[in-house]
Length: 266
Length: 246
Picture: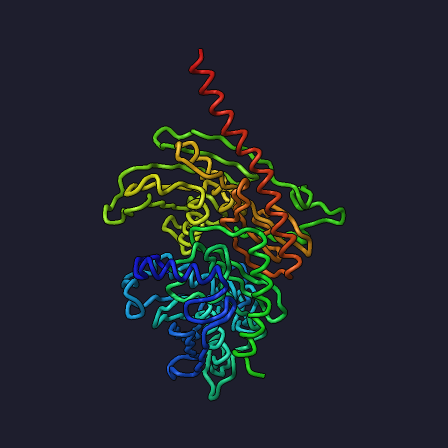
């Protein structure tokens, strides 16, 4: 995400030139994704988990469910929190320490996609209105950074939620008693994020690391299962024109469909 | 403590809860050069929003290792005063403020000739004294004026405005109530002479057709604010000129 000088100038120039002629250095078309691999249920201790490989980018997401307090303005809804860690082992540019603005932005983009499209039926996660609800923690763990962490994280987060099992319980005198067995987390929507990079006045889908270091700016569009836009985020130091944005929305419509078919079976 | 949500945000005559039409901005008041120590400053009131922006720089970078060899380091801090909202906000920067500081910086940087000041820093501070929806946008509008007031060379001013959907209707410049009770909010920043969109965010729920309309509403809002922005800046320099001539 940070632009460092890891890509040589010659290569930067080559990447940009190729894109103006409609090609990419790694052989993809301008709107092609890298190969996507998905695994779920890989961490037994977590309530749900998933790993997405997007080319060489690798993101793992684990979910945990705990009992906590609801927000005062929505006393009968469960709570959703998304956190992202850019783990130092994932890239020479990641440093240990509290979350920096890049990881906070990443978490908030993923959060917005899930929250605004109302993926989780939070009203079903209420135990005692105003007092006790379930809190769903989504922890995004970046394991290898090779560009487009946003889409990989959004995919992995959704996959992990679909994989999440809630323990059965009953409430006895205000106390929660865990019963045997599990039920899946109530899910009703499948948002997908598509990220564009603007390079030489062209927009390309799913930028890899070296393209991210060349790009002027970035745009992420998240769409729900009905093709409605539920979140948008522009990032980076450049700008977009209105026609470029509208073109991106059109491409995002196709791409989110494509990704959804890949991610959500049946 | 908790405000009761009104039943309707838009009445049967298409009038919004604060009496505005769908495409009407809140009353705006802007001043520039209002802080003594800052190199540039601006103050904006947009409805109940009251926001101060200050610019320090170009100056030496602290800490020094952050200096960039080929351009100035632009830094931005968006911060809300503890008393700016209904329930006291802790003065420590929240995750929201960290994100907003980043997107505001990225919205302003395309307008600044940062390459004129290698190894220097330009620091932008935005303090929200009172918030009522659309603070990031009003903050950008004010910060861009503060940059201009500091005499920093710029390609264009940056002006920002939000639009969104409230009870099925597409409206401009949402208040906090409309944002919370509405279906979508889309803040947008524009360099009006270059037609360059430097900030675009959205959350909520919009079809692609609605999206296009909302973006255009926001752009129109920006253009209206821009006229005001220009006037304020001009009148400051006219005042200086008159003072010199006397």
